[in-house]
Image (cartoon, rainbow, N blue to C red; front, side, top):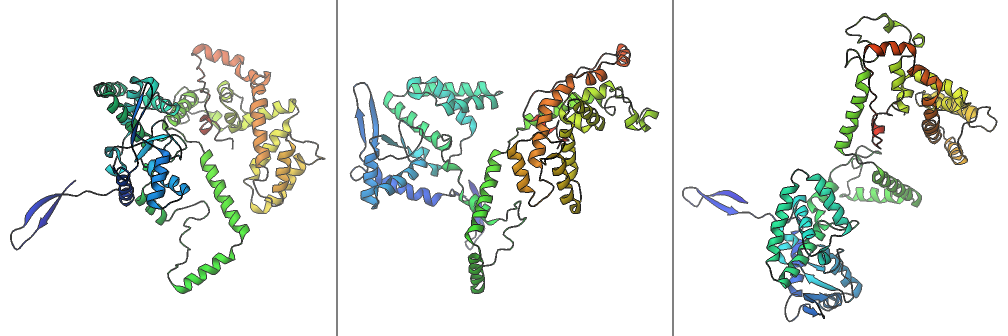
Length: 497
């Protein structure tokens, strides 16, 4: 990168251009490893490089893992275990690689390895993007399949990249064809060596799943992340109250503070961190396209029933455009319209969002002798909005009415959930019945709700004679059925919790 500098040597100022090369964050580490690699490649004292011949094939410019370990032990005064570990670290950065394995590690056996060409060393500052990776994978599919067949994870990456670059895939494929034609013009042995070195380069920058990607570790970024104050769920600024350890008094106070923590407290902190990491691993990663698709489906499904969006939506007129005295009538005295009942069919959350829907659903559960499930769910929902002074009393009432052994209206929960509730009731709060409430909600959603939609009670609202007269004057609005998706809970059931 060119930089302009102005110098004055007892005369007029002169402008000079000089190249400023910015070292990568791991420049010192790369320099040390490259010094070791240079000694390994010396003709007289380095690792013995040979060409292995067999009946049908010839493997050029390779060395065995045993020779590498022996060289490290003799020249760096290491044990065998330390030599294998150091060699694996150097190999993971791409300075040498196994010729027949995608996992770049050093083994103390007769397996063969090859040095990487200096053009592919990490000190060159390579930052390959996905387009170049797609070209490489396409080129691999055009070459010798017996020798360069794609691994399973590479085939999955190729399919994913093809979906990502669907609009420019023809240009990527054409570029791969040109690269493959150039490779065919080379001699067989140099082409075989270059193919293995290119594969090893991508094994470093796009490693096998569950392998460490050494190219992603940035010392500057690590230092920055370690110094800045991070917010956590337990403390908005955890580093704020850390004592300054520079002074002697601060060091003594810090030592006494550390000694005050017992082993049980340390285990609690570790267990809390483990739980936090597990929750982060199990969280859903939503793609923006999926979120937009869900929102689009929701709008398409609900817009025909919104009088603020459409003038003649459903049975309800737009209150900003039409004066209707029925708007002031108590909702309990209104007749349940067809379009209102039709929205209950969208999801269980839509049914529970409507107070009249809750009432009709409870009437249906009374006929099936399972209304106590709905009453328990409503009681748990109301418990979360009660003041703190009433929580303990309400918790005891809910347990006595629905979970006690002698209750006349027991709910359908297993013994494990009941034991969990009893354990939480030792220190009662608003969330004592969280597991039981979720179990009852899923039970009503999967079992009772499906039967309610098929019942005569519900069909009486959706197939009334008065509706037939209204629908004769205008076409019936088609029900937009949402696709079954794990992301549909973002919208349809947000009101049920």
